Image (cartoon, rainbow, N blue to C red):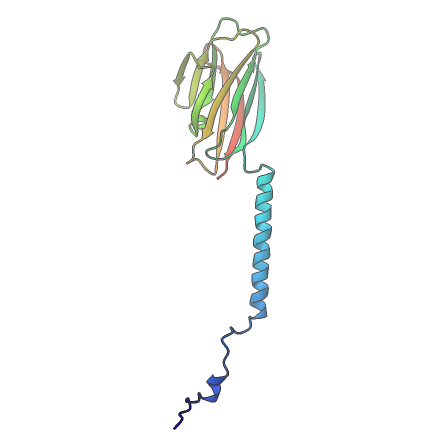
Amino acid sequence: MIHEPPVAPEETRHHSTLPPPPDIRSVRRGRFGRRIFTVALVVFLGLGLVGLYGVRTGSTEAKGGGYEVTVTYAKITRPGLATPWSMEIRHPGGFGDEMVTVAVASSYFDAFDENGFAPDPVESSNDGERDIWRFQPPSGDVMTLSFDARIEPGVQLTRLKGEVSVLDPAGAEVVTARFRTVVMP
């Protein structure tokens, strides 16, 4: 006797293993999402190509008391990047025999990992808000200070207020230059 396999009920016999056809709305939503992601990625990469995510420098000038001060600084930077800072002090007729005294906002330089400062100050102190540096007077009319540093990795999404002043021998501000650096993530 030959046994035939049992026959499944009518409703289960014709089911396919293919998934049901997708809903047209979900297909459109997925395509729209992929397009938005692609545009955002292209914009992000394009901004990187033009250097927006790197360091942008600026400079500011101040004049007073016979001095001209130019500070070159990072307008925008990111943590871990080498971040330029330099200062040029001009004094027509030279600096004489007096020490050159410069005061900088301590809070600005607290955000940096210092690699070097040139020239080294002969003497330095802090008055609670400012670092005060005294330098041997240069020969000539121009003195240049440069700071080799990078922003601390933990400093992010902040604005650093910078201020640098040339002081007279009595400690009074003769000329002050102010600047800001934005630290991006």
